[in-house]
Image (tube, rainbow, N blue to C red; front, side, top):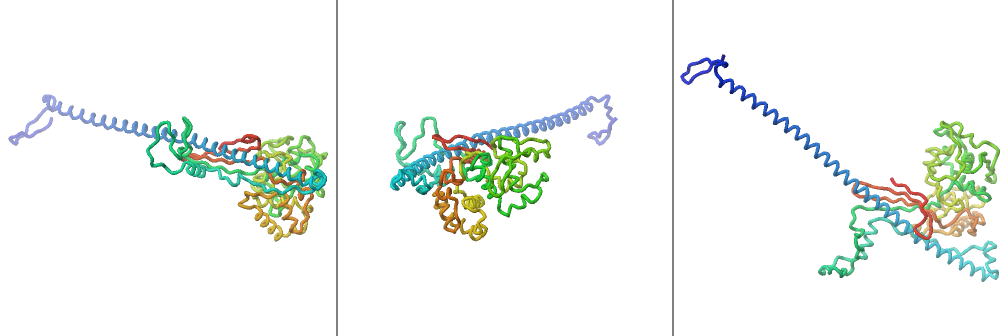
Length: 450
């Protein structure tokens, strides 16, 4: 029972059981509170649904944009790789023409000597024609291509737009259904690297002269005293091998037989021995055997006993498996360590005291760099390389001085690595290819996309 004041100032009692109005008011207030709760709950649920929908929409949009940019970046990288292969095709044509010209001049010189080429057969030097390296001259990148296209197209014309069948003067007209390159969003760049300036471990299987010159060539690459710690200290597998032992391991891993090779430290002659070539691999878990076949990828070098991350960090960029096993190493390298090894291999006596003098080596490297005109666009010939070494009073191997067919050094290359990168938005794609000259865009030896 409740007490209420009336208008006269008095009070009266209201019994809820008798007064229906009081009960009705109380019930109405309860329904209004429940409606508020329902409204707030509905708003909260709808807010969560809308936020989740907006988040999913944003994620889907981002994924779609990234997918679109990834496709663009992929094809931009492929464009860079194909343009690089086109540049190498021009290089192939130039090398072919220079080779034919050199042969013609050599034949004329031999005929003038009165022997129908006998002078050349007796060791007369061939004409030292310049080695033009077009792939170093032409940068493969989208900014350069766009500039080139803009230069051809000319400035925008202020004349009225041409009719449907009349092309605008000074403008390139794309083929039907195609768009000009400059209209695509994104960019690309590519770098070309000469693979024949590197050492191929598969060369150790070449019989005859290869069994003498290639082991020495590899040893001279690693001979620098700065690398002594790689062979005097234990590696990650608890092993310690000398340079000569590592060369033997490389030969045993790629040769076809199952016996260990031996090396003569005086003549650097590699020959088949009688030991078990699997000996160094018995300590590995799981145990495995040498491949007894040529290497297919640079990553297989890690399988050779004695080669670990430290060795690959020092020499990994100086090895390749894609070149022909009979191809000589190109003297036109930008790697000082490889260039130093080339100087030692060109010398008739790699242990010449003059080659132990750092001042002599530094002077030779400076003179060789001066020979590379225009940033290496005009490369050296083998004869020019030998002449620089001879000028320092160092005797050079006859096969190098005369650039004979059995020379361990060369001045032209046929195998190249292309690193192509395409970028669209925030997505970048990298394509690595290795190609070898042919009549078209080059024989594809290796392809990898990252």
